[in-house]
Length: 328
Length: 203
Image (cartoon, rainbow over all chains, first blue to last red; front, side):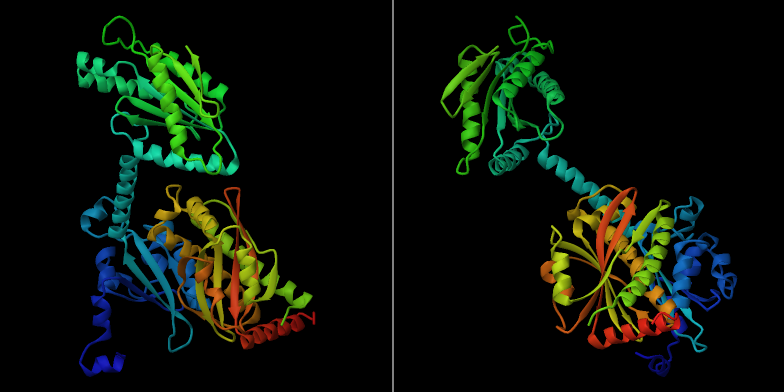
């Protein structure tokens, strides 16, 4: 609808601008404010009479030397439009949603568009349009926090804080593919708490939970921060993915972990010594047609053998030649 | 249609004045030194420009575009591989996100950065040639090579292609600025360059 058509139905363009839910400032070629709308007087706390006819930098001293001033210059002299994003300028102008916000100097988040206007004298004029982005930005912050929480809860074991089974399955599949592609070795161990059901029965589940957390923390201390992944594999079982490690390194680490748990000084269920772990370890360099099942079951077989040999030990199983090697 | 050496040098100089101004504005925004340079200007066909962009290892792009109109019309685009765009936003806004969650907030920041660089290039041209352009507001888009706007449209379009090097916090980030011009617009641009060169006593 053109201005003339608006006239025809008795609507004044100034009223329309005053009804807009964005801030409007119209500047002449000398950067003097020739018009501001109701939204702007409300949010700036200034009367229209204190704004109209005065230079932009007098009404908004915070704009002096800012990108807004450059953008205005650009619009008036080069006739090019600019956008000032909330991410880079945020609270540039002293505009507030409420008087309470003003008292606490909580400025609104702003998105500012500066566009050239053609004036009758052809000297250049510009329009500054300010949108309140406060709600959008707090919504985005909230969404981001929620995403972060969600990501943590879907990949982390709630009790021990190490990776959960879902994360373990994903990580194992991806490390397996990486090892396949780059022809690298991939180590895996399964760490099982010895006689833990008896421990739980003796001391109660609550103390059992504390014990699991302590052991998880002790194991986590030893893994390399990049690449290795410690996960709670099942109730009292942890699994550790070790990309790039060979048999010797995996067995040395497993032995180290076994001894470390022994020195935590957690009494066992019979109160005859300390709680121990059995560890099944394996390494493979996966061929193109191999799958993670072989790796997992090799570690399982090794763990079973460690239990069978009397617990509190490390057993290594090689899927290549079907042999066991015991440590500890 | 191609540039002779004098024309190429003149355009290179003009655009470097532009990106230099843009760097000053960006430095002011982040209160840290941002350096920008455009070492080379080429005139190529649309397909060649696409090939240069595709030559990059990644084929996901961030583009900021503005349409300029005046004595000649140009669709100007700042193109960064997506990961480079993310790096710029990280360095300028904050370190907290991955590409998947690059939100409106960061896209707007990228849009503004593009706006500053493209406006600076075009106003540098306008200053030197004593002409004026009008322009649309910047538009930011993510996309792969399949929907890069440069790959569709008028066969006859020519592309003024500049490589840009951006240095923020000692990190060097590369991208390209493209100006898509119709053949008549390209001729008009060349005329302006020649007029400028002869006014300088150079041609």
